[in-house]
Image 1 (cartoon, one colour):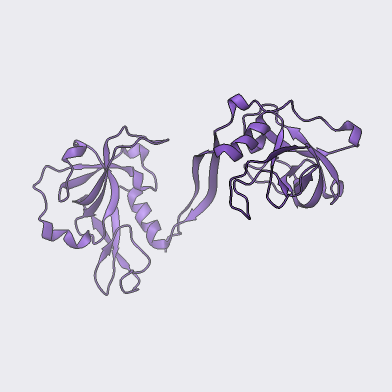
Image 2 (spheres, helix red, strand yellow):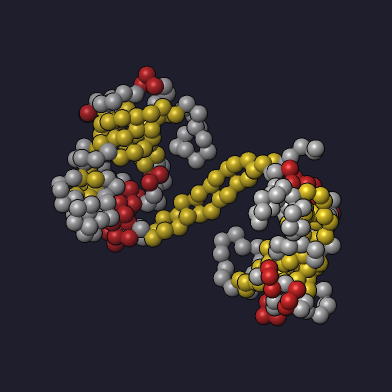
Length: 320
């Protein structure tokens, strides 16, 4: 059997949220070099402030500034940093209770080895060179040589320019390992072929193929090549723009039931006005130029109408 395929995959997006009046005040403080905490009904001073009191459930309205100097209450060593962490070299993560606070703040501590950090150690904030109203405005904590060397806090909040939103890039890197059946499918795409497999029990044909039929659990087998023509079973007109969108709305995403298959394939429909796409429309695969092919379903650029009469409803209704 041919070896299975694998490839690195990155899922990334910018997470955007409105901060509200409580976290907005905290992030505004970071932008202005001030650490803002919230006082709870039980007298706890928490940084970042809690949006709602854990006892009364009322929104936090009692704010207090705390010191950029604090004490490490616990820590862990990071010998091999990963992408997105504060440093590309070994460092520590720690819980730091800032002077004036009763609950610790979690952040990085810039030390060269585990021997340079300990519980009870005094540290201070190292501010980022450019601050925008984000938790990363605290670049890290660093050891405090003596109390006299502590840097003062900022000059106060600019309350006329509160931070109301924050954008945080989110990224996940992983290696996707295709099953033997999927590997056959992707190799076929690299050759300009659409391949499925059949369940020997119920005789359903799956595209992409699956290791086992979800209906009766029987392993699929064989190699079924399909022509690339099919029928739209259901569709969605995309009208809303979003970040990273490659096509200007409106356009259509549809499930296409390929001739000879028993499960529909989700793909893009082009070559026809969005408001003319309909269930039962006959379409065909439009491939990218050969030099752009890879082990990917994106080798098929889109599906376009064949010009043939619509399929009879009875031929595809069971796939809806």
